[in-house]
Length: 272
Image 1 (spheres, rainbow, N blue to C red):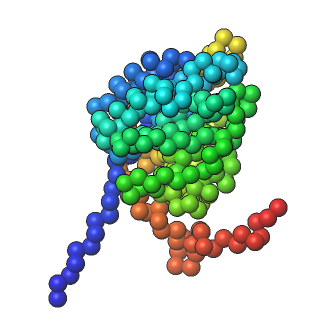
Image 2 (image 1 turned 180 degrees about the horizontal axis):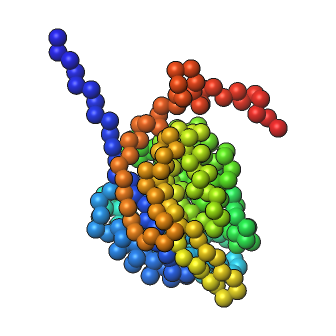
Image 3 (image 1 turned 135 degrees about the horizontal axis):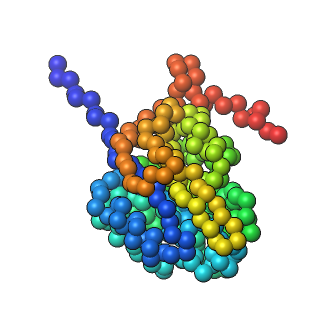
């Protein structure tokens, strides 16, 4: 009898960039990103929230000055970088869409596609600067991967990651500019309760706009489907680092031979 050789589980190279964006200097930030990623090969990279502009805007007009639409320089830059590195890149930007201004994340692929997610849950003074996101939580399919995207403060709402998991995301890409200390631990739980990989890319440093300052917590991380931190940064690391992931592990939602975290839900009892 001839036995078929079992298929070898696919592994991908996935990485996170943790760095310190220069406030309102897109050219400097794109130059830094190219320095970190430009000579690397990977399948997937996640960058921080608002990676091209910095974060601590004084008001809506301040953010509008550096916001871009699809014709902006960042889209062309990331398309070229994606082709050069061979991987998909998730990056954060301030997005102009007509008269609307969004805190957005873009998934750029080597094929030239740009998939946009607009932040659903705005944090603190963001509500005075940005319009609430209107895309909803989407899962993007690329080269057999199923990639979900959420941004920073979306983490505190379990429904964000759960919605992506219900839409069969294997990896949740999570660009962030975190200032509270809770998120990194909470994302361990998000991975466990949804059986997915989570890639949280945070920035570092203190950003002062002349009126107020914010200090960011660093500690970017990748958690696996069991909540293990398989890649972690400290508060001040500036680097792009990668690990190997097996995305298909996210397709198994069994806790044991009796329990399944998706099919065991009793949604009829969850109504307020």
